[in-house]
Each structure stands twice: as C-alpha cells, then as structure tokens.
Length: 299
Image 1 (spheres, rainbow, N blue to C red):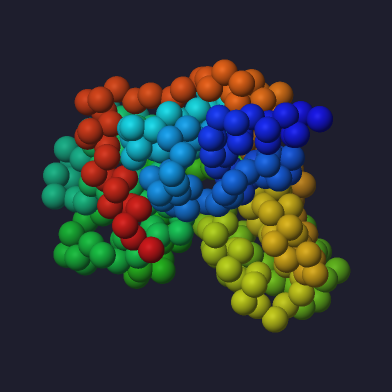
Image 2: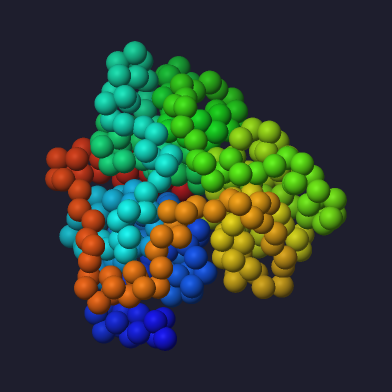
C-alpha cells in the first residue's frame, strides 16, 4: 500500500509530515502533526527533523521556510495555492499604507511572503483578535486580506479597522437556510463557524472559532452534536479526536480544492525524492520574518 511505503520512507529518511486540518483524510492519517496555520508554524520551528513535508497550501510551506531557513521544507504540490492570498499584493498594500502612514499593518497569514514583508505583524484566525487588541486604540489598523475575518475581529475588539476587500471562496459556500434546517433536524446541536464566513452566517453561530478553537470547544462542550461551518474535512479531524460525538458539515460544497491537490501519490513522490523544496528569496524572507515571528509569539 502507498501509505505503508510512505511510512517506511518517513522513518528511513527522518522525515516529519505536517498536515493542515483541511487535508484529505488519507493525508491526515499519515501526518506526524495536524493543526491550524498557527500550530503548524510553531511546529515547523520546534520539531527536530530538518526535513519537513508540509501538506497544506503554498503560503503555509512558504511561511515555514521563512521561519526555519535551515530546514528543507517540501510541498508535495507547489501548485496548491490560495485564492484569498492571491487577492492582495505587496504593491497594492504599500499604496494603502501611504494613505495611512501611521497605521499598524496586520496581515493574515493567508498571504504571499512579499505582503508579509511590508507588514508590521502577521496573524492567524486563532490570534487575530489578541493581536488587534494589542494595538493602542489611538492608532489606525490596516487589516487584510480577509474582510470577513477583519470585520469580525473589529467587532469583537470594539474598533473600526481599515479592511482589505479579500475573502475566502470556500467560506462563501454556506446557506443560512440550510443551517436553520440542520438546527431543526438536530436540536441541541452547537453551530461552530470559522470567522472567514460572511456576517449573515456568523450571526447564526453559537461560536465563531478557528479550526484549533473548534477542536477545543468540541472537547469542552457538553453538547454531543456539532454543525461545523468550515472546510468539510474538518469534520473528519473532529470525528477522529472525538469518536463518541457527532459532527455535521454545514455545507458539503465547502471544499478547498487546493488542499485536495496533495494526494498519496504526490506525498510518496516527495518522500522518495525530497522534492519540491520551497525556498524564499533571502531579502524577502528577512523582511517578512519579523512579522511572522511576532505572530508565532501570540497565543
């Protein structure tokens, strides 16, 4: 079986496999560590292996390469991109900064390295609120590229942010009517949604959380059924951790096609060849590293 061969190569070559919570189940099952963007960013710097196969999308592997330049970061499918990250460029962000020269620029990790390089600090959905709250209220904040995450964070922090107009196409796939129907079918279920969803969906939730927060909430809650408003394979991750509880995707159409570009065949090829390696030009990496390291330090 492919999975057995991959596991043997992993041991033989001292490989570490990191995988995001949205990866296909067969990839999740082979990972040494699973997590959200923040957890994986931290793990890339902490694990002993200097050969990491990163099962996620390009910006995640790129971020790991910036944080751990001494390690070999391998992405089985370098064409696994992120439409949200593609909605912002360094040039356009610099122009916005020129209009607000005193503003603190907080950039979501779902962004290119060049954008991180002209940012003050990066964030994930897990720590965006804490980071915004750390900025004095007298200062303006530019937040991008996800407008829905930025709107939610600003609302929770009680302040108005200067928002980029980007969004995650996957998190647009939810219907208020369908969530209402699921609530009716499953009375007592908790609705957990990602802060990248539009406001009309977020308003229907019991809790708005990143994927790491969803895992924690499912463990802490007395509820036994949860409706999950994020990429559909998060349900597999939750079922694996809490097999006695029931998890229902809020939409079967919420599929990140880029996350699914990594297959067992591509993972095997990377384990055999230690390719493709993701590198970031030194000038860009040096400029971006400070903003990323600040993100990692926040809980």
